[in-house]
Length: 303
Image (cartoon, rainbow, N blue to C red):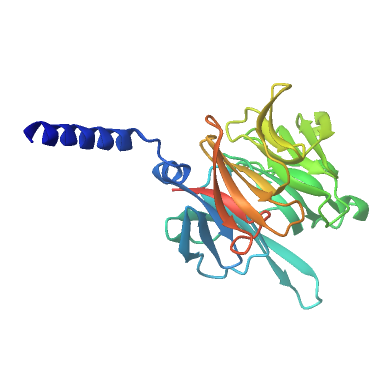
């Protein structure tokens, strides 16, 4: 009898040890790293991975037309649209520090634009890449709309390319911490511009969608419609076979995780969020489309 009890105790201890050695899930590790994925709305955001039910309101005047989170996961950049007495559009760019319960007070970001179509910010928040309309009336009308790099520290403005469509031809804007690398998608092609000022040039151009610059600046991830690919130092490596990526690709602030939308059947009838660890290439699924809007709204936040 004593031997049987001792054997059962050993089995129980072994089971506890096995549980302790079981790898924690991606959601647990994301939480441990004080990160989450949030769905941005006009007045609030909702954490969708690991999923939470409550909304985190921004507070104040938060009727935002367009919003993004900086790649470091710590700030919300958003635009508010207003109309003057003549019906002319004027957009204001806002920055708010994100907190565990919402967002801090608004900080107006001075920029030489009257309207924003879309924008993104560098990981150090020093640079913005903006598809927008310049407010300077002395600039030729056909050159006011474009894609520009704006230096928040100096106010320097550098035109990258024209912007002629409000559709989905141009999307997934990225700019690095020095402002000398700009990456985005245009008509199903990934474009990379390098250099500064008048020396900026188109460095590469290849088929692909949803490019996402790594926060550490070491390359970018994109999809060719069949798989996720890491482009780094002119070399490419397949990370994961994933057909039908939709919405956007988001890299976590620590460069360890990626998130993207997946069209399960290729007809947008069932879309869900997927989160993968880059090193192990293991994945977990987040909410379905019914609970989560595929597209630019889902971003990493880090406390």
